[in-house]
Length: 439
Image 1 (cartoon, rainbow, N blue to C red):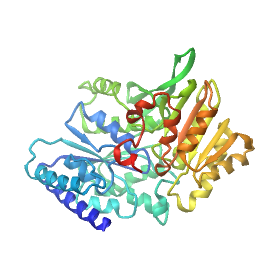
Image 2 (image 1 turned 60 degrees about the horizontal axis):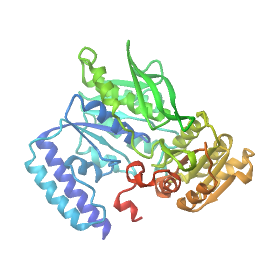
Image 3 (image 1 turned 180 degrees about the vertical axis):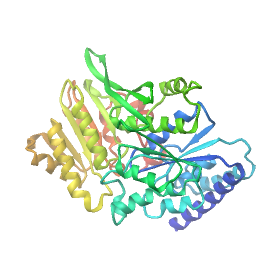
Image 4 (image 1 turned 135 degrees about the vertical axis):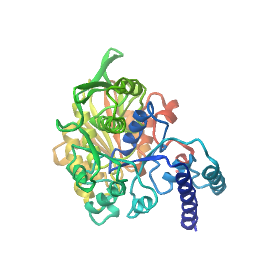
C-alpha cells in the first residue's frame, strides 16, 4: 500500500512540475556522476548566483520525487499523508499560477536503482550537464549487473542534452572525458591536469594557532583560466574532493558567460566564494572534546571516498594520534569484501587507532591486521553511538579523528558523542531533521 501511495504522489508531483516547466521554461542544469554531486551542485549554485536568478536542489534531493519537489519549491513530507496532500494542492497552484520563477534550476540527479534517470530525462531535457566522477567501484553498484550499467544510467543526462547545450566534464577521470564523444555540442573541462580548461593548482592545507597548537582550519588553492588566476580559500573542510566542485562551478560560469573575463567575472566569483559553505558531513572540521579535532565525513562512504579521506588524514600535521572510526560501506555487492579489506589495509598504515562499526566493516579490521597493525589498537562495534561513547573514553589532547561510514550506519551519532559543542549539532551534522531523528 505504501509503495502504491508513493507511486501516486510521484506521478502527481511530476505532472505538476512538467506543467510548471512548460509554462515558464527555465534553463535546467543537471549534476550527475557517482560521487561528489551535492558538493558540486552547491558550488555551481554559488557560482551562478551573482549572474542569474537561480534555485538549487535542497540537501541531496536527487531522486524521482526530489527533483519535482525542488522544481515546485516544496518540502519533503516524508511519511505524513496530510502534508503530502498539502504539497499536491500547493504544487497545483504553483504550476498553474506562478509568474516569477528562477532563470536556472540547478538539479542534482542520481540513480539509486535501474530506471531512475531514464524516467526523468523522458520529460526534462537539460541545457547544461556537469559530470563529476565515476570511480572504479561506485556507490549503489549492488543494484546493477555491472559497474558499466550504473555508469551508463548516470550518463543518461548527457544524451538528453539539448543540441545547443553545454557539457562540463571532469578532465581527471577518463570514464568521464569519454562522454565528450557522445555530444557534438560545446564542452568544457575542469580538473587538476594541465590540459583542463579550468584547472586547480597549488593546493595546500591551511593551519592556524589554536590553544597553543597549529591545527588545520581549511584548504587553499588557485583556479587558473588561461592567464587569469583566482585564489580560493575554503574554511572548516579538508581534502581535494572539495576542489573539484569549485572547478566545476567555475567552468560552468565561464561556459555560460562569454564575456566572463572582460566583465569582471573573476572578482564577482571571488566575492561569492568568500561566503561559500561546503555541505555538512563532507570532510568537515569539527572541534572535539578534550582538545581533539574531528574530520566529519559521515554523509556516506564508498571505496574511492574512504581512500581519499584516509590519505588526507595521513597528510595532516597531527600533533597527536591519528584515529579512524569507519563504518560499513554499503551497496557494493560482490565488490564488498575486497574493497573493505583494501580500506583496512590503508587504515592500518595510516592510523594509530582504528575503530569499526557494522558487520561488513569487520573486514576493515581484518585488512588492518593483515598490515601488521597491533590488534590491541583495533576495536569493533555494532552501533555507531556505542562506538562514539567508547571513543570518548580513549581520546586525548591533540588526537585527530576521522569518522566515516555509509548513510544507514548513521556515523553522525558517533560524532555527536565526541564533538565539543553538541548543542550545535543541528547546524553542524548531517541527518538532523525530525524524520531522521526517529530512525
